[in-house]
Amino acid sequence: MSAFGPKMPTFSQLAPGVRRLLAPNPSMMTGPGTNTYLFGREEIAVLDPGPLIESHLRAIEKIAAAPIRQVLVTHTHPDHSPGAVELARATGAELLGRPAPKGEHQDATFVPHRVLDDGDRILIDGIEIEAISTPGHASNHLCYRLLELDWICTGDHVIDGSTVVIDPPDGNMTHYLQSLEKLKNLNCSALLPGHGEIIRDAERSIDWIINHRLEREEKVVAALGENPDISTDRLVPHVYKDIDKNLYGWAERSLLAHLLKLEDDGKAECIAGNWRSTA
Image 1 (cartoon, rainbow, N blue to C red):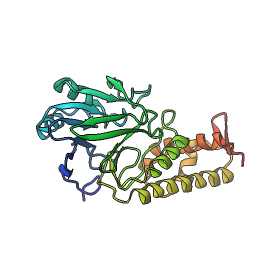
Image 2: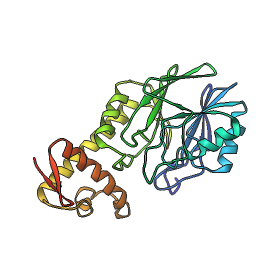
Image 3: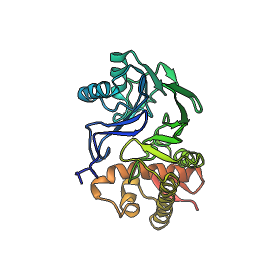
């Protein structure tokens, strides 16, 4: 066990034509690091080259051992996409994904050569990949379905063993829950997350996240009822009693996402920076 969760192998062959390379960026937010996936054998598509770490980009090229034709990203957070532009420049590959929205935690360097929409398909070395629009964690988030294997690469939409921060205004809790239901209804056989190991029981994992978020929402409603006219920073300890206080800053961002969802649902309102229940 490492400081950031279970130790993962740096390189794994997951299936014929599907490989995973772990970026050397472990942290509290990324767990063991960002998973980079390589698809194909004679020609290669790379998904999520991760942060701009020269040694990792060179390792991708070495493991590919074939021309890299496409570089895809799930979303433009700094642990997933900054390496994409440099890898595409070095290899002549096409950049695919969705442009970065405005925001402090977005990688503005990522400008795709081709913008992918929900249902668009990519063919690389006989492997067909379908883009799935899954906004919520990020407004431009895409998952990618490997159609023959019926596996879905989930980026940060679903990760192994934890939940992700939903950070407004780009992060949206309503959209996130809707996208989870969308992914669940695809009934895939496994999930390849952006952080952590393969998730074999996809439905169970997605159900756990949905239930966890809805239970947290219930705690928010209860806390608002007991503490009317309260700011988000003072509300955090009432809602997140189960987490380390060092994480309260990030928890406040997801709390705000819950509050904005409740506001949209007509169950909460914000007046002069303080929140109250309207239920």
